[in-house]
Length: 284
Image (cartoon, rainbow, N blue to C red; front, top):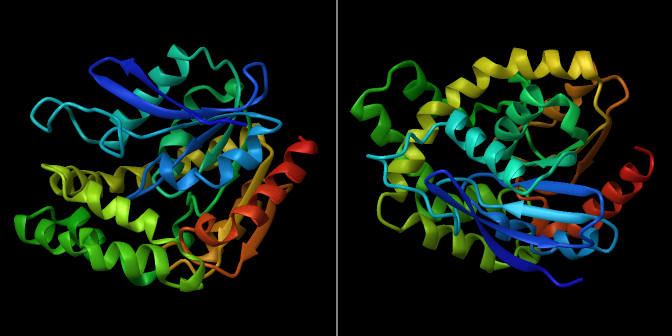
């Protein structure tokens, strides 16, 4: 299956997205995380596209999506959700399976809460919705949430350095010999663009709103009991396996798989994850 590349206008944002698979197939909407883009799905898309219509957009402020400057666009998770909501409607996506990773989780779960009838199933790959999923690596971010001073904002800038992106985000807990440098090199290049760091610092501050929404997300899980597969890199330095296991509290039927890798589990385990997804979706 060939992957094609497109732009979709949503208000003042031009959303870049990758698409593959049959046009009349069941849709899988892939939502990436920080500090990445839809490029992170490059190995997964071909494996799913033989049976499904796979769509992977770049969130506002990420990748190849063209977004207005900070003076003209409010970089919050509500804004990222609103763009994705408009994107799904522009493409006429009446129903879809959600694949959420990292930042994609609070964006995708906002979609699910707003339009529960559209979500056919959920795949969470290190996509958190529970406070027990947080490791102790969130110190500077949590300090900034509680006290958004210029000094505390500056302290979060270390999260955006090439060294942190490579060593913390990609290589921690993973077999480094299996991690292609393409992924983190591209993310580092994106982070060097004008305003990119300030956009990300805005989103780091606003991440606190995601934690505030956790009760809403969990209420959605309890009420609608979506079919859910949590497939987690268990060595993730930011999101602990407890965050995966917590889904079973609200969705007893949730299927949990912990893989011996890190945060960007697709970098090392795309084959295993695709097989788990295909097996899971057969039962949905």
